[in-house]
Image (cartoon, rainbow, N blue to C red; front, side):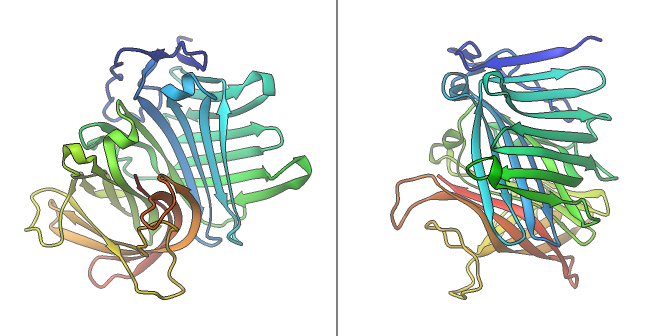
Length: 374
């Protein structure tokens, strides 16, 4: 069976001095195979992102498999794993592997980030026309287990515009998925593992898979971002909103999708202001909320002390708008992006509590969110 293979090692051979043009986006495809297949330029990168959240337990797992030029010459190719238990305990590790290999055949796509000398790996396999994706964790003394993601019925959204501004492609191979996760996460040794199980006892656990690639580093692309994936009653919401760098005007760009009972009803690439006239395209209005000094409000630890977001999605085709109020519910991570101080910036991940819908609707749901300032 013929296959296509992309094999990177952190010996410097996968990093090109000249710019490398990524392979073209394939409309209607999950685009799981690497876009920088043979080599990657010094500022280029790719991400395979997986997440799931339990609405009952308010627990989650978030995983990022990375390929970037520094990975090819430094510590290795990075895998980020973050988890939060029902009791709010969190766990985060940045793991580094000497190799990243992805192989695609007509039946499946397999990827593995591995360090053979340590007998350690994190891998995935995508099957059934990319409607089922499995993650396997096998890093002795750190993490083991698996995560299974299955596409929910309905529209995939893969035929919609994949551009997040002029420099980023953002595709959701599984934008809406049912998920199970069974993992053991270790603190300091094999005797101190703690189990995390999501979706294995008939509890509703949802999540998804994102694919992102770019020729520019995050500081070259943006100054700020907000990410959200959530299910709210009959709705599913997926948002990635960035502000571009100052040199390009600090402009907002979005890749936002709204589904109702599995049907894609709003595909917003445009970001509008609160006072803007009626939009001519599907659009997103995203406003930060600051709910006073209530001790029950959850905030990140950095300068931006917002307590959530107001999300308004406008569909030009059906002439409707949907409003959702997002409140930060639990902090999953806080990672600084600047030196400490009163104006310090950072990256904070949340469990998000969401309520809303059309006028008169007040469906509720839980999701994963992340905000970053550089």
